Image 1 (cartoon, rainbow, N blue to C red):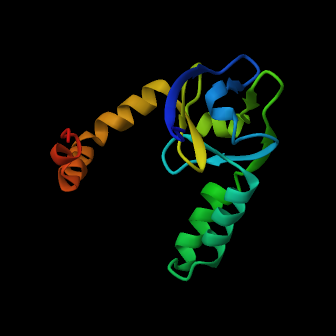
Image 2 (cartoon, one colour; image 1 turned 30 degrees about the horizontal axis):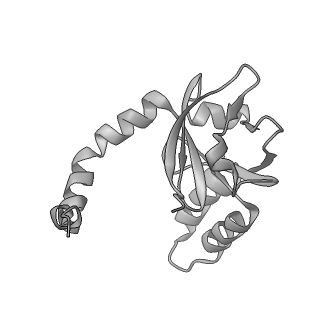
Image 3 (cartoon, one colour; image 1 turned 135 degrees about the vertical axis):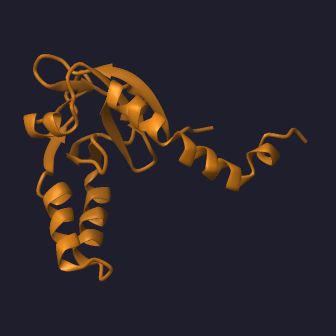
Length: 150
C-alpha cells in the first residue's frame, strides 16, 4: 500500500530551509513551486499541479473581479520556484516565512498533490478551531459503519 498523505515534524534552520521527510520526497523532485496557502501556511507543489492551479484561478468564470484579484495577490503573485537540495531541504523566502509565521518548529503535511508547511503551534490551533466542523463532517460520513469489521 502506498500512502500519499501524512504529517511529520520538522524544523526551520537558520538559513530559512525546512527539511522535507524522506517519505514525502518521492513525488517532489526537481523544480517545485512554493506560494502562500489559504490558511497561514506555505504550499509546495510540482510545476504540473501549479499550472493546473494557476490556470483554474485565471480562467474560472465563477470569480468576480475582486475575487480574482485577491486570489492573484495571495497565491499567484507570491509564487517562487524552488528545489530540494541534496540534503532534502527547501528554502522558504522571508515573505512566505512571515505569512506562515514560520519560526523554528514546523509541520510538513503531505496531501496527494502538494504539501504544506505550517508553524507547529499555528497548525494545532487551526485543527482545534476546526474540530467541531471535522466532527460534523465525520458524522455525515457515518464513521461508525466505516470502522466495523466484516
